[in-house]
Length: 170
Image (cartoon, rainbow, N blue to C red; front, top):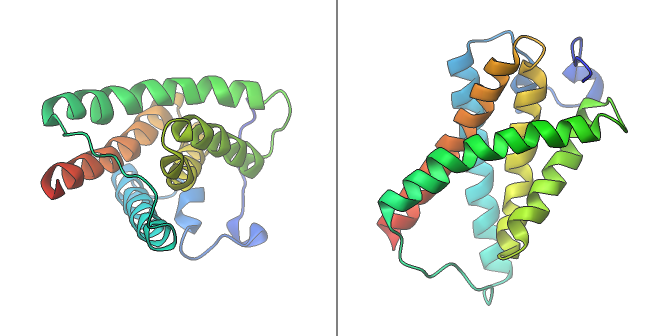
């Protein structure tokens, strides 16, 4: 797999709001917190926009079993999906070594997978998985274990907040 070192965000127009995603020159905790906030803010705003534009879109209406959701969606899901993401990166790596292309293809794959049963979820998850992909690809040159942990943590935080919102707003 290509090492994505030396990426300069100013050269690709991504400095500013999301520029922090492309550097490991910060604490892991700070990276996780900022990336989680970015994913959550984007997801919630996009959900509101889609619900405003498409008021007839069916929403999930099942009752939430908090314990089951925490286990499957918050703990197991991000871990398993990050493992699968590594395999997807390996396959994409046969065709391109470009970080942004790899992240975009990965995000598209995950959006399609999440949108199979609930299309609006796929649309919302595209950006989330773009961020998860960037996180893994940027941190992997330092340590694949660290990259795995950071990516899983961002994903777990996102899912935990969503599960809690659904549970308490139900």
